[in-house]
Length: 157
Image 1 (cartoon, rainbow, N blue to C red):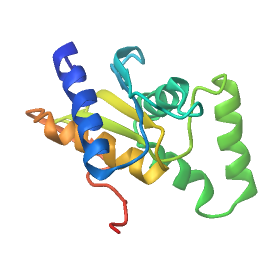
Image 2 (cartoon, rainbow, N blue to C red; image 1 turned 90 degrees about the vertical axis):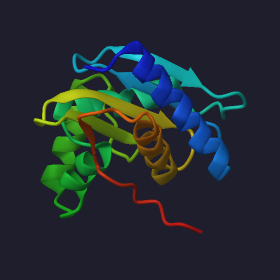
Image 3 (cartoon, rainbow, N blue to C red; image 1 turned 180 degrees about the vertical axis):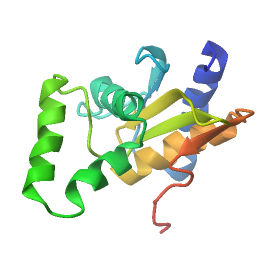
């Protein structure tokens, strides 16, 4: 399980990555494996649409399904199968909108594969959100833990 100190460090590292890259301000939520927030930070000058609820939904999706939000989206949309798409929408509806089918949610696992937490980021583009989440986790040097996805999908400019 992640400690409060580790969760705060992940938030601070994600903010630092966002500032370094010059992305739009972000909101970060770090969640424990039971779906409760451990830490949350919202940068100054966040756009009104950078709701903490979006970051929370991304982290909650990771905890609920044990996969990144990118993997969740891809599973239900990549085949362009209307049945799968409707299933995804139903999952979002049944959870009261607490699930998010877009990148920015990252799973944290212990070495043996158990989910120990998740990070949700919102405010920049979805790929930039995912980049900041992964950068925040990586810079925290969480010994014996790994992320899913392992690397970001951000196309460097």
